Amino acid sequence: MKPWAQYKDGNNFTRISAREVYVNERKEPGEWRRKEYFSIHSNPNQRFKMHHKRSSKGKFYFAYYSGQDLLLERYGGGESLTHSLYKEAIGELKSTTIFFGNSENRAHIEITSTELEKEVKVKGNTYYLDVYLKFRSTSRYDLKWNGELGIEVHHTNKVDGKKLADLSGSNIPLIEVNVNKKLAYRYPEDEITLQKEINYKSFLKRYLSKYIWATLLNNPSTRRYLEEENTVIKNRLNVLNKELEILVTREKKRTEREENSAIELSRINKLYRTECENSRICLNEIDRIKNFSILRFIFFKLFSR
Image (cartoon, rainbow, N blue to C red; front, top):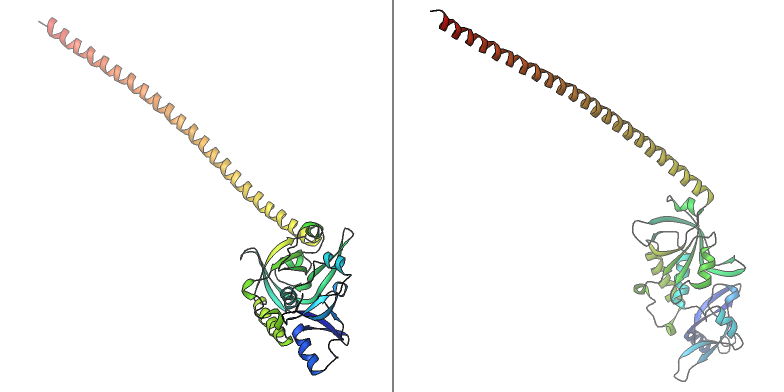
């Protein structure tokens, strides 16, 4: 049971609620019940035929025609309105700031073009990105990602399994954006109107144009980015090598000074010891002379009588 669908209006598809079909049918009997209705998938290859019904409790809804079970299972059973409007709101942004897990790792981007349900073929499998965009940025991601980005909106189904494994090996940068519960669609889904959708998307765009918190799923690098990064690393190594050479030279000079100081200290100690030895000899000689003089004096006194 789905409370919304879309119908072809000329060359365009217009979303409509099951209740709106009932109201319009009362105004134009037979006109709205005969229309062909489809699921609200953006990708034409994922739109399934639906018909308008009324439950036993008087609720209006759309149901899938039988015979589409395998395709429905393949594409996840349909797309929620919240997921669809979130995706459309992102696709209509002109600019935003993307935060990759923390406030330090971010990139402000100016969006130049967008495409919903971008078809991507990887390893023989076909996937559809919720939003694919081209952007300009003064951040490193402009060169790193060549100004392109894929976005998956996470409402009920995360990107995982084989899809994640395949897309992680592609050249397309990919982020996953969680639907913020605080920004949830505030109206019961069986009371959807086009004007309410427009108002809700305007509300979302005001919020999302300020910032988008995202999980980085695939982070490839262009050849030019890697070459420039390699140049930056080489320059840093050259600077570090020069600083190391300066430190080695300083250490060598310090060692030489210490060795010279040790030699000078040894020389001074040797001189000191020599002087001390000379001083000791002198003192001994003085004592000898003094002793000899005393003996002469005593001798003189004794024998001078």
